Amino acid sequence: MSRLGGIVAATAIACALATIAASPSHAASRKHVYTRSRAYDGLWSVSIRTKFGPCDAAYRYPARIVGGQIRQADNDFSYQVSGAVVASGSIVVTVSKGLGTATGTGHLRGTTGYGRWSTAGNQCYGTWSAMRRAEN
Image 1: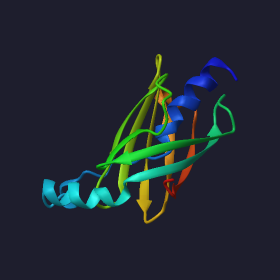
Image 2: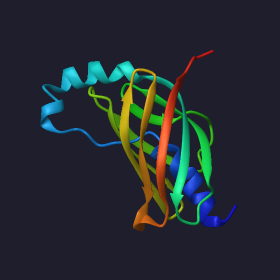
Image 3: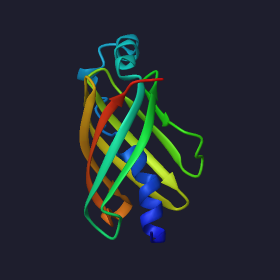
């Protein structure tokens, strides 16, 4: 895997789960958003497909949502993940590794999710889908 591909792979972990929808219409109150966003808490499996760019064609990664915040699902701290899901199911995620960054936007509904992702400068971009996994 190329250096860019490795950066994008790590970066795409979070990009797979992503969208920004924190508009005032979605947030009647902070308490309401916090309580409702917990509905998406748990372990998710994210599949990423590259549509354009010198990145690997596909990736699959775990992600965890806790209290509406998106976190790494494993102990691999070679990359950083930040993001959140709001009550409507809209989510935004940014993943960084070294100097590489990717951002994803999308929507979760029930036990599935979908959206788009791109690296800084659109060197690579594509789509993602997610499925909630049962916890052991």
